[in-house]
Length: 129
Image (spheres, rainbow, N blue to C red):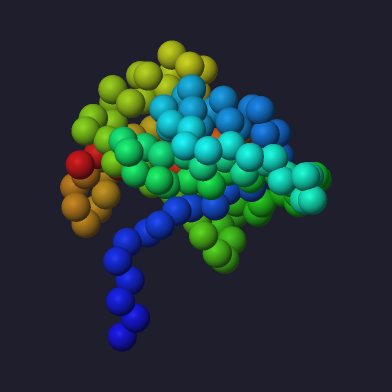
């Protein structure tokens, strides 16, 4: 049996690097661990952490193809972050001109959750714990 320990990181390719960098750092509150420009690939790589844990590699590439998101497509569906209070998180996002979907209730756990999108329409879920 493969002995996986944890998720190490999530890699995201963006179409507008400055816009996505601002979104993930200033809107979602990620900390920049490292930012490098990879000249051979004409690509930025931004390592982001949350509460001291490395979570996201944000990449830029010249003219990446659009991601199919809706209707549902095969592959990774979304990323999800836990919050203490979904309504408070929504209010903070609204103040930053980001408007998540209406709150839903997980039919199996009874917990609240909502979705919104990053600048490239990547679905992001907030799940109340």
